[in-house]
Amino acid sequence: SFECTLESCLGNLMTSACMNPEGFTKMYGANETEATDYATLYPVEAYTCQNKELAKSYYPCMMDIENNDHLKGIVDCTTEMEKEPLGATDFCLPMDKYITCIEDYYVKFCDEGIRSYICNTQEIAFNFDVPQCQAELHPCLASKSPAVLPGNLNYPGHCSLSDGQKTKTCLNAYFQMYGIDSTNGLPNYYDHQAKITSITDHYGVAGYDIYCYFESTLETCLGELMYSPCMNPNAFTVMYGTNQADSINYATSFPVEAYTCANKDVVKANYDCMVDVSKNHFQGIIDCSNALNEGLPTSDDTCGAISTYIICMEDLYVELCGPSMKGFICNTQEISFNFDMNNFCEGKMPDCD
Image 1 (cartoon, one colour):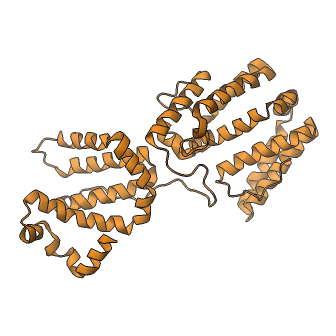
Image 2 (spheres, rainbow, N blue to C red):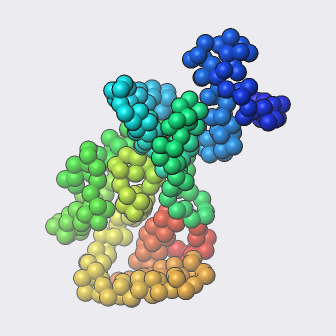
Image 3 (cartoon, rainbow, N blue to C red):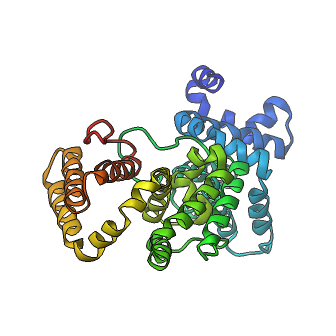
């Protein structure tokens, strides 16, 4: 509101010589540094207010970085820039590296959606302060946020640094139980799944007791964080640097694990049949998947195609294992699809028993 009032009052003078550093020196007697700082501030403010909704959406993350990380990354980026020799022939290059460093710092703690905003605010400031570098700085690309389906996001909001650190500590301990050292990142999601499968393959039905002990230990460690923004796909990207597909798969696996372990008795009672399906009737699962893959591109009803797939899977397991599996298969599939698709099909899939 303040910036808009000023801009309305000034009109064309907003971008005139009256608003450059020399103008502030003449009007207010400001020294060179202060005059430059004041003059640079206003084009940055104007850009920020033009992108107010984006700035507001990232405000919690930006404040969290300032309050908890104390902007250490900005200090580090500045230190690296100042290491460049004063007599460097291309003095624009250190500035360009600095801007990229700042972008990466904010993306690390927020997400890719903030990159363009940080890039533009930094370059506007540098271009105003050092106009000779205007053509030498890298272009600020449009934000490359992951594609998101409409619907209700799973665990929306910002995962604070302190909550993220606790979540990662709990997850690291969880992965360590599977023999995975996640301190420097996570393996491909399907490699993690292979670790889980190896436990049930080795211990049989008793493997689910181990599987659910690991899950309950994680849930106890996390507490309310189990269903917080610290366990959504973006959080896995921030914590572990996973790609989009792995981030979604990891995040989706935990609500499915929680449901599975809450219904462990059903799983254990049908264990032999489930193994038989996976080993001797896997073609049935492939047929259901192929029908889904063929139906999705040609159907305007995404949720209808997914519902057909879920019913196909239910029918397969009920035919081979009996009716007690119907609700379990339905629920695990719907939890997975709802989480993976931001609840886009919630209320549009079969009712689960």
